[in-house]
Image (cartoon, rainbow, N blue to C red; front, side, top):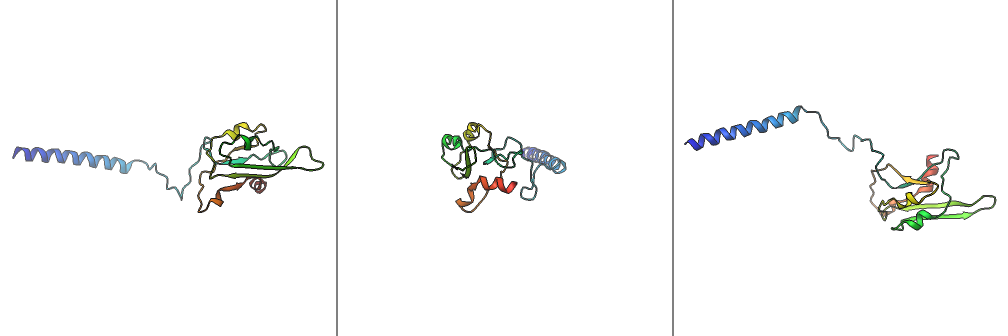
Length: 146
């Protein structure tokens, strides 16, 4: 009979401790973000897909079609094409495509770019239903931001 009362006291004590933890959590401030409705500020350390950097002086990109990003990419997910036009010094960028389904976000392309024409974007909400939605035309994106 004495074991019965000791178990009753021990059980009551653990019940009160558990209720104390629950009450403390009930009155403490909320730290959870309701994600789809509330957006969080991303840090500068976030690595999204690469993006062409817009040159503020000219209003276009900085890429000089040296192809170093395409050559150094181990995943071969970058396609860069340029053409020589009359009256223009150097090549003119005609295509800069990124297949993000192949990209490993290693950052070698960003490091190898001498004119600092590409950098990581802050986009972290990438979702889609087909692979075609993850092939980005980065030249078109720069022109849309103009």
